[in-house]
Length: 222
Length: 75
Image (cartoon, rainbow over all chains, first blue to last red; front, top):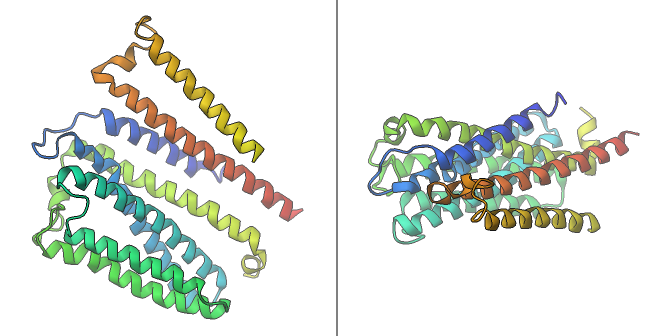
């Protein structure tokens, strides 16, 4: 029971987010109208992706320092979770853009940056799976993963914030969207971020335990 | 596989019950009056919560299955 408490917390938070996200009174926004509610569902996907890739790069660094294969496996599982949520973020973003911007794809700097990020991390999985030797695979994948994360931050956050973009936070004002966000929205958007990150961790936990069952020898010799 | 079909059937049966609830509510206003308020937005909430419950149910099932495997491995 003690091990499961955070999974129950995740379920309760997300239940609140789903119900409150639909029912909460929102400020009147002439262009976005009711679609601002997507803030509670579309944006957290990217936070889960960012969190997963951050954890993944931490474990890559740990692998390079310790040479323990389990660190590489943890890192890889985080990349897979991040890719899943990133793809969901991309899909939901395109659905939102189709209605709000008139087309699912309009070469918005943030869209392009996010697409490049997903491709870079897809290349990570291909690179990792194409090497048969486990030690070489772990080493190369870890180094590549650090480069990927070093690209992710400028591609998704820094470059789009310096260009004119349809997304909020462009034109050198990266935090404008957060500052001007109505406090009512925060009651849902912050729990949403937390809840979805916890759900991502839950999925990661399940995947990692499968790996532990498949190859216990990697995880037992500390 | 058999189990999967069993769970799917259970969920489908549960959903068909909801459908009935929505239909009879037109005659029986008290039973599901909430679902008809505010342009039936509560109905959408109910659907979303059902989907979410299904996903959590699936995750818990996976969790149980892995627990069992972990126990087998220990013994």
